[in-house]
Amino acid sequence: MAILRLERVSKWYETAGEPFYAVRDVSLTVEPGEFVAITGPSGSGKSTMMHLMGLLDVPSSGEVWIDGVQASHLSDRELARLRNQKVGFVFQSFHLLPRTAAWENVALPLMYAGVRAAEQRQRAMEALRRVGLDPEAKGYHHPNQLSGGQQQRVAIARAIVTRPALLLADEPTGNLDSRSTEEILALFQSLNDEGVTVVIVTHEPYVAQHARRVIRFADGRIVGEEINEHPLRAELAEVAR
Image (cartoon, rainbow, N blue to C red):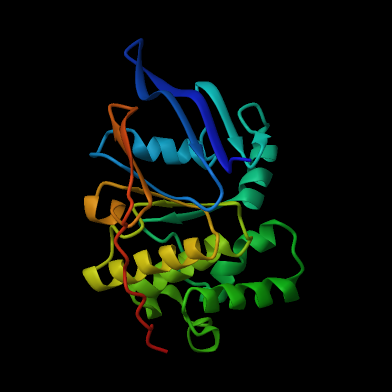
């Protein structure tokens, strides 16, 4: 069963009485365990696509399926529950709560899911360890006490703590230096090697070359797709503890 399936999905907005298509008639399937990059220039519709894939927005037409669940006609409450259970998100700007410890940031999706407090902490610490951060050394730090690369690792830990079917990342290296970019790409590859399904949205060809499958977007449409037989491998460096 596909983790993600879009069938003839479009998203449009009314502008001066005329529809403006951000995404037009896109069909796409992502299978379990894939590592996919969606790439294209700014304004090509790729970020809108990520919002549709992750149920952060609803299509104007067409259908979205997540792990076998047809999501297009669910209520807001049902969409929120499905997002929490099935999708993990990583964003360019980290979106961490500034006055909250790293492990508490990671635990937030579990709190919303109603997981008991003791289990929240345990699973958050495990997720931090999984992304290469020592939970005892870094788990109690606030975001401003961490480097950009470490903050993005916390954000990835938050994205995987619910054990989602799909991990979506929107320009996850856009705010990072070259060394941190390599570390984060290596982390995504490591998670994918463990069986996590990963979709990265990026405008950077270098980042896309680390994925096994590359889908190119322009003007709200898929204009090309290729299988990368020899994706680049990034080096997973140890994080200072």
